[in-house]
Image 1 (tube, helix red, strand yellow):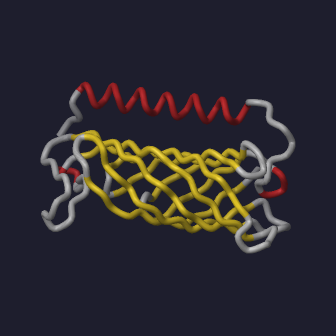
Image 2 (tube, one colour):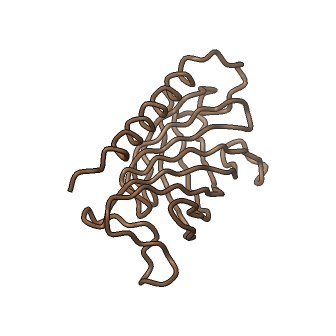
Length: 182
């Protein structure tokens, strides 16, 4: 079933906006106080779980970072998400840190492709038979491990997702993954 023209335009606009954001973050000069592996600011990698896809992370300073993911999830396929994260030292370790922060998720999908918004045995969650667009906010809580001698970051995160468009619904998301810092 083809995606209606409005959703195609919105999807294209969202993809272009994500691409421009990644390019700006990649080529914008930053202070040398980044806290990614090997003091790098930009990393990319894979996320498995909810969502499953490809992601990028840009460290703005030693405590804050922007994360973007594009992939598939129960909320929609494609699923486009972005988070603003604060990292803190809960374990008094230079390798293991915790983080938390808000995010925004856009989901596209239809029942015919096997993708629905918040399907949970028909109880209280939004379900749509035709092509759809959804928007949600989320709050992520995670743990990241940055080995001392490798340009890698491993992470595990969980958090609530609250759908606001086209209707209200709630779910929990969780993922694990790895990023490489060239």
